[in-house]
Amino acid sequence: MIVPRQSDPTPAGNEQKAAKAPETKGPAPAKPSRGTPPSPAVRRRVRNLVVLAILYGAGLAAVWGFSLMGVSTLVVFPVFVLGVLIASLETDSGLWGGALGLAFLLSYDFLFASPMLELKVLNRTDLVALVIFVAVALIMGVITHRMSRQVQAADRTATALSRLNRLSAGLFESTTPAEACRFSQEFLAKILRRDVTIALGEPGPDAPSAVRDCYEQRIPTGYGEVGYRGVPEKFLPLGMKGRIFGVVAVDCTAGDLDGASRTLIASVAAQTLVAVERNTLKEQQDISEE
Image (tube, rainbow, N blue to C red; front, side, top):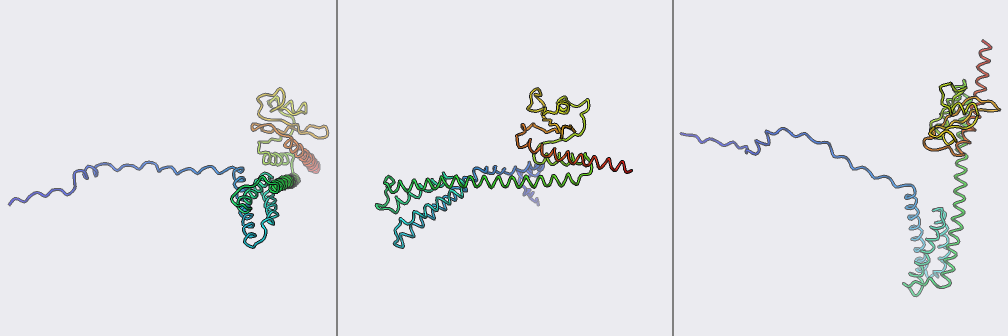
């Protein structure tokens, strides 16, 4: 008896797929990059809008509450003035307070003053109220702006004093002139966010002409000075009491030094020279005692 041949249950297509070499996986898809965070100006505007929305809702809720109690809604105008005052204080600008006062006035005329659902902003009472709102907003905006500037100035002063105290402590703990210069240049580099080098002594013959001119003529040379185009550093003389001790080099690839930076460098240089002279005398005394 002839036994029929059994067919292979695996389809031909599957055999071809099995014969194929396993495909290598490609690189994983890149994760979507996060968007850049909003700038401080955008965040400040969003915060101011939120503050105005909260104050606006609170003012209208006060009018609605007075109307439910049967109290004349005219007593809400002091509440509106308070809202304008708070808006000017919180946003540090009278413009936002004036905008809130205008919104208060238009909403009151449209929703609560009879006849309702009609704007009547051109009558005398509303115009006087609008002038009061704008005046309060502008006055408080100016006051808060001045107060914030005074607070910022006080913070800067406190920061500067703490930095100078830290500098004085570091220079006092130094034991050699080189150590005092190294501490001062690291201190300046951290505050100015520039590379700073304090070199004691006369520059060598291989030093750039700007460095030698600064030391010999005792004037600022290099970046931003006449006759030194293309020099990326500014060189300042390190001297005191008519004596020259060295040169301070400041990297100016990011721009020239402003007046405040020069004042800071001069103050640090003066304290550094005091420490240098003290440490030099101490070294000489130690040598003489030996």
